[in-house]
Image 1 (tube, rainbow, N blue to C red):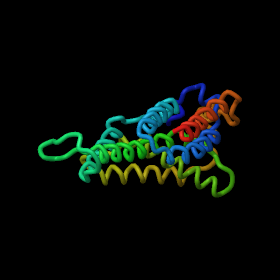
Image 2: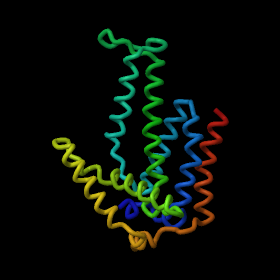
Image 3: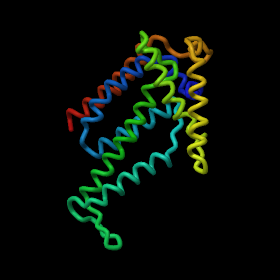
Image 4: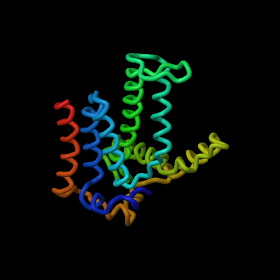
Length: 209
């Protein structure tokens, strides 16, 4: 579980609920941002925060996503031609658009990895259902190394079946493990300050640019 790898300070000072609501507050400012350089900086920041949050990031996987989306956008020329490769024109507009969209998708994944922690508990039946959905998403991301290229469907089925069996057996007792007891139920002042700073930075950057 990612809680084992999460930075101790983060576990002691920032509750799962604060992380979740901070992620929700960041999303509008992130999605409204339109400057490529700022988007790149945001992706690097959220990638760093995801690592601090204990999530394993497979950089080759994310770089492949960025490269693939960018190449597909280059197939539709737009703007000034900046290079020609074997008769294929590389245009500035298509390059910018492709990079921006690719980085946006990767950044959204990073935000979700930071905002959703295994000990997240929301009130009510709907909150319980949402918590299981978030838990399932985190488990899939945590154990995606079990997916095998030689047999993607079979390995994917095995992962999902294992996840389903654990969901059926899940009750509130799974929140009482030693690792979850070590996480902050209520955020400290320092934890709130860090979360507020990250959120405020995204909105300030949006307003300035």
